[in-house]
Length: 136
Image 1 (tube, rainbow, N blue to C red):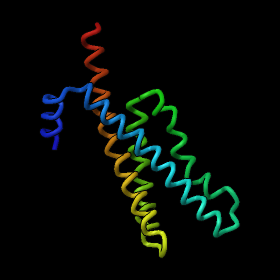
Image 2: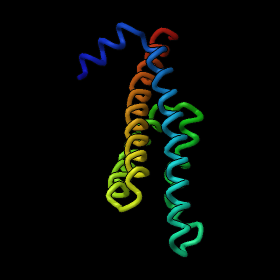
Image 3: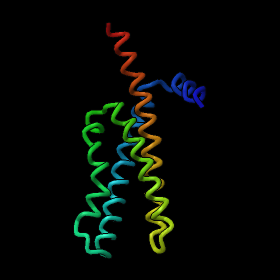
Image 4: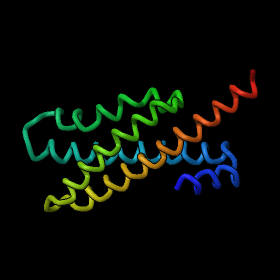
């Protein structure tokens, strides 16, 4: 797998790969936020938990917003780990009657976020290291 990624870096260059990974991160992050908001709203309608189910679902993702805005590779790496928790949550939601599609969409969005974050963290880190080497 590593050889394939290295070959992709040589073939396309780091700048386009970083840009594409960044696009995937932003799109999947926004989609996951939307899906979590819809799911939290649905839970809120069926229980009397108030706004708490919505906050519990959204807060971990919102905490990574500064890392996404500031384009920090390390923050993206940590967000990749957190996205796996949302993947597991999506699998559990998909098994509930009437919530299958929402769970599957959450799984797909979190998987896309994971792939985008790992790619961005790798490509951007290499890009920054190359800038440090050539800049000094």
